[in-house]
Image (tube, rainbow, N blue to C red; front, side, top):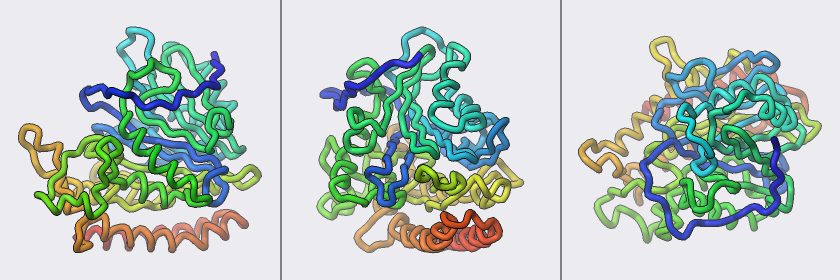
Length: 405
């Protein structure tokens, strides 16, 4: 079932397909070769029509796991996640791999939910794909890392899969792979996300020359919250391109963070030989420019931070609702094409009062809160009592920050 692939095509289409907006994501795997601490990073920036997302803990048939879900999803769906043995998975939709006329598709969330409960490493996942009932009912790129040093993308359609190994210098010479909504082995110049792909490529390639700079925090601040547009050659966060010089409104098209973005997660894996329970899910729910990244661990089990879980009133996670309240102020227009315009000066402005500008220091406070305990836990294992206490302090800080608006 596996296809060999060494001639990876790193291309940017000369012409772009103008298609209706559908489910889309931007993602990457960074191997320990390029990260600051030598641990792999798996990044998923989720775009979907389901803007309200939450986290959920599950007990699988073999392994417990923590997963990202759309708030209204059934309990058998995962859109990103990690399990108790350090196997982590995410996906991006692909639009140039399908080779049939099957209509009942989009079962990536079900596949990942099953894989998280059953797979220990890349080899398990490959056997899982081989034995999965056909048609698989997906057209997708699956990014996977494990606790044994494995890191790869799998391009999968209804009948076959192809592995692109991020540790293979012939495939990923610089130690990373970027994906949006096309597959390298798919039909040339079809698919979507080429501008976002080029944007991420330019940002990462520039940073890759600075050894040891790639961290979860760098990914959030330079990718998940980037307003650089590679085709137009503008960066809205730079003074010379500031929308303040005009009306303050910007058309939301082909930036990495978009109106359809519902979450951004960086899974920080472990080095071979380290305790896989130290796999960290750095998680932003809602629109990342107005979201706050918080670390989460499978080891916490049912004691996950309550603001990331569905509450007693609805399936919504409170932290996602808080971020979406700010997002809806940024995208307030309803008529005709107006919903595609964002009031950018609410995000960032010269006075420093933009939502993103005010929330980034809060996120830095959260990072510092967990920094020393994380280093201690890597040596001694996670202290669950300490983690619960830290989560309580974090929730107070986060709630106060959002309530201040």
